[in-house]
Image (tube, rainbow, N blue to C red):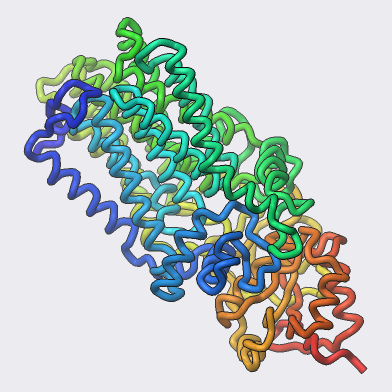
Length: 638
């Protein structure tokens, strides 16, 4: 099938239920989804447990239904992860059914990626009424490097993106369906459920979604407002039920809410995972400097921005072309749905000055892909040669720039992309072989992200700060370190003394920007000591926690290695005020905790974690096992 037939293939008018498909459409969609599955599943076990922090929580949830419900980091239920637990529910069930392994943790994420591509295809086909542009959008989604990364990883972003894409599809259906109320309520419920995956990031789509429905949906304004109120109620129920249960549950009989300062989910959502991320009051790693051009910088450009210029051109040109159409026009509605998603999300992620990981940008990928598909279909249908040519040229030049930031990675590719893209642009404007030029343009603009996506699949990714694609020059990420090659660092003191120096340099890594402290949960390539594991395992079943340690990283590693609960004092960062010294002393006195492992990379920060470490060092005898400092909490020093 010629590539350009993708753009030509007609279907029923946009927005009608069940548009007709050309004969090749279903096989082409099946091939796209199969290729996406291969991309997401190939060599998946190379990623190990991915982010051990979430892997340990999924393991805990497979052992304890209480840990499952609350999202506890350990089956002893000392503290939760610093997110709402929806993604852990999926992985926890998988681990409970199939046992703990890379595949049981990561296959659900990979399948979420396939489903997301299918939803993007379905939404764009609904909008433009053509199968070809929809498949182009699906391919763009499947090949976005950061999407390939996150759908092969166990962070909550995979579920977040799937649910938001499903909400976008439901909204598109609502805007052109006689069952509008049902669809818009479903969209609200999906966004609410996405809140349970990653809290307030799910709400970035809400302003645009609500405004688009209010302006574009058929019917009188009063009816549209009523529908939005119903959708808001669905959102509140879907996202609020778990929050209400946790807030009403007696604090003494549930794990501490990790990441909060007062054991409150609301404070976690609004503070640590909310305003602290926006205004910079929460110290932590950061990819790229805040600003309007952040997405085009060295840290983030190769993650998500390959087709960002094309998406912007498609949005602007599409709105101009549809300006005189009726208020309820479905093509313009689709542009507004995905355009508002892209603009709001990109602006917030670009300007936030707090903790920011490059993989957050995966939330932009469905919007970018959908706009590219809608714009390409609309431009081809209108015969807008200049716009098509300009888009091909700009995207090719931008790909040349991005590939140049990884000069040692396929150095010939950037020149091939540039030449093919510019040649295609010329052919689209003045040549007679317009179809061939369009085919060459598609190949040229997708070559760069495809290469990055394949490189991502071929490289193992673990820890809490993964990035897609090869190493780039000119990055400004805080706490940046080399990919791979890490080793298990030696323990620091139990009081939380850092093993790095004060100038922002950490063992085995590069100099940081000096913004904040490296958290104890900010993993790396660490492995659990086999000798320490052998020390912990005898009699482990007699204790609520086989060991305790400051921060989540060491706790997660030894919990995954032993299969027994390990308490993360201070939660992810080692700074959460839980447990208190008195509470920890009571657990030790009751025989609930067997060993204390020196904190390794953790910093106690002067809070309860430091006091606990100091008490342990003063009360029990230190042993050194394979470079780790450990204390037997059942044998006080004489």
